[in-house]
Picture 1: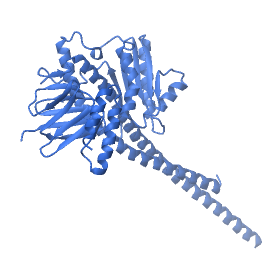
Picture 2: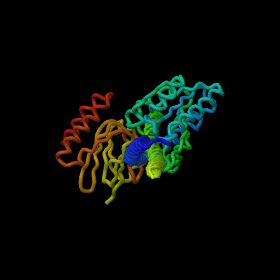
Picture 3: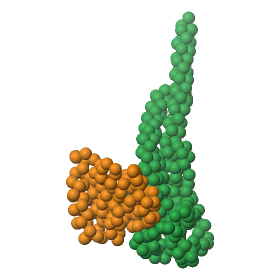
Length: 295
Length: 125
């Protein structure tokens, strides 16, 4: 049996770990509240931009009889080059949060590679960058400060090249992968086709589109501008969503760790008490047998 | 009174949502005013100042870039960045004007119009 001092040190160290994990849990829960507020504010914009984009898209498509739709809306079933944009966290200690995203990206890569499609990766978040660098898989674009502090301007900077490559025809499809917030207990992996935009995503609203006047007269120009905004915004939103999910995931992981630490302390305390009692018993026996021998 | 619903949203949240009498918007091809019952319209907005006339007050919001969707009963403005010029008290008003100028100056490719917009912003000081 381990000696008393060893067990006492162990209990102390586990208790310290417990303090750390508990603090991390509290920090994450505070940050989660803030991030969810951000996401609610962003939702107002999301509703409006979907609305406007769908009206213009419908109108432009109607004018052109749906035959010559703008490239951003043209569905392409046989892409040659696919960009995968994915978002992971900058930090670990949040359960399987990052691994779920990374695994999905790897799976998607394999699927496309089997079909003979060139896949290019663009990553936001240090954990994802680290993983692929370690596996010696090239990342076309990487940024590792954005995930922890989403910022609209930086997000649009990040996605700018993606849109440019798509518009110039270098890529045929852009997929966005991130682990999104579902509720306090679960995260939901989201795989979305960012470009081309499918009009199902943008809810169709037929009502007033025939009456709609567009200024400047160049419908395409307005549509292209709006498409750009839509993409920027979706990138930004996925960052917020991912951050919220990261915090909720970390909260859970740290909660579990704190509970584990508590159990460990309990078990160690019992072991300590047993060891103490054993020591006392041994001592007593020694004394008694000493007294007996003197008689 | 006849009013129209105006909402101004940025990716960071809604900054204005109220019934207004009229609103003047800096359209890409010139400034235009919207009254209740306006024909449906979608327009690009350039850098400038949105003037909002409510029943009892006038407000101004500086924007850097955006779109507007006008329908008969509602005006939805989508912008990247916006600063309200008339909201705060005296102390914060100066800061708002500072912020608005910064916002306007961050739009690099419209040098001629920026001076005009800045002049407008200053008129709210």
